[in-house]
Amino acid sequence: MNKNKRVLTSVFGVFVLALLFTVAPVMAAEVDFEASNEETGADSDNTNTLTHDNSGDVSVKNDGDVDNVASATVNTGGNDQEMNTTGGDLDTGGVDATTEWETVVNDGFGFCGCPFGGEDTEISADFENMLTGYNSDNHNRLRVLDNGDKTVRNMADILNSLGLNANTGDNDQNMNTEAGSMTTGDVGADIGISNWANTTNDSDSNGGGLSVDFTASNDTTGADSDNTNRVTVDNSGRKRVTNRATLNNVINVTAHTGGNDQEKNTTAGNLVTGNVDVVTDIHNIANSGTCCVSGGETSVSVDSSNETTGYNSENHNAVTVKNDGNKTVTNTANVDNVLTVEATTGNNDQNKNTTGGDVETGSVSIDFGSTTVVNSTN
Image 1 (spheres, rainbow, N blue to C red):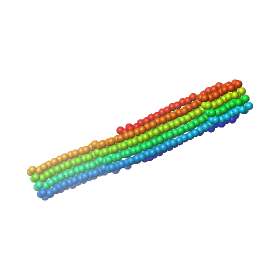
Image 2 (image 1 turned 45 degrees about the vertical axis):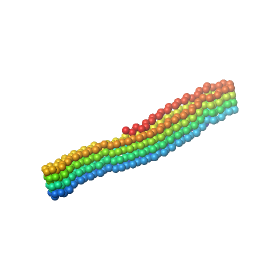
Image 3 (image 1 turned 90 degrees about the vertical axis):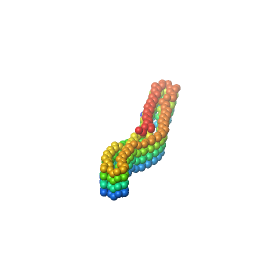
Image 4 (image 1 turned 45 degrees about the horizontal axis):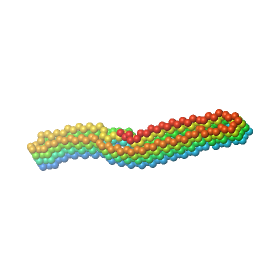
């Protein structure tokens, strides 16, 4: 028996990592501050000031352009078995194509956490203006800035193009006295494509806690003095995320197991054509992620006093806490999933045989699966 069987397995694997960006945490900050102006003279200007600025500015711009292109042309058919007194079986080989593509572009792991003052910020301040003179100007000020600014611009273009042309048919078995059976091989295509573009993972979702403990006093101040205790805490930030993704998945499969001829044989065997089985699994995730904006837990403790102040003095205690943020997300995504399958198991001829065998054509099975998630940033 003349047996011609060839099996092709095409495995295409592509992994593209355009950006893996991890933000290292900022170490904890601790500030302990004590200051005093004691027994100052008339007409003096007495000030205790602490300014803590723990902020930053991060800007990331990513461009990704990925092309995954694979093309395969496979032919196990086109066999001739003619004008033999006794012809053996004609059995063509199958075609098996498997693809596994994974593409990751602009993956900001840990980038989308809060852009504020790192793990923990603790500030302890103890201010005092004591026994100040006539007409003095006495101030205790604490200002804490624990914020930041992040800008992310991601652009990704991904093209996955797969072409498979498989042929196990177009076999001839003609003018034999005794012809054997003809069996053409199966065509199987298992295609898996996964695309991740412009994703941000909120692994360090909240900035560390901000704790401020403030004690200030103006004690026994002079006449006509101006006495102020002021606390300002700004724990906020701004984020801008602009993503654009264009994903194109194009799959073309042409499978042919038919078009076989079995003619002018005295005794013809059975004619059986192979099956065509195409399975696709496509996952597209673009412009997704979670971003926090607020600066985490904020604790502010203030103890301010103006005690035993002089004639005609002005005494002020003020506390301002700002704990908010602004986030702007602009996403644009274009996704095209195109699957074209041409499958032929028929068009077989069994003519002019003295004794003709059975003709059985193969089945065609197509399982197309596609999952697409775009613009899902929270």
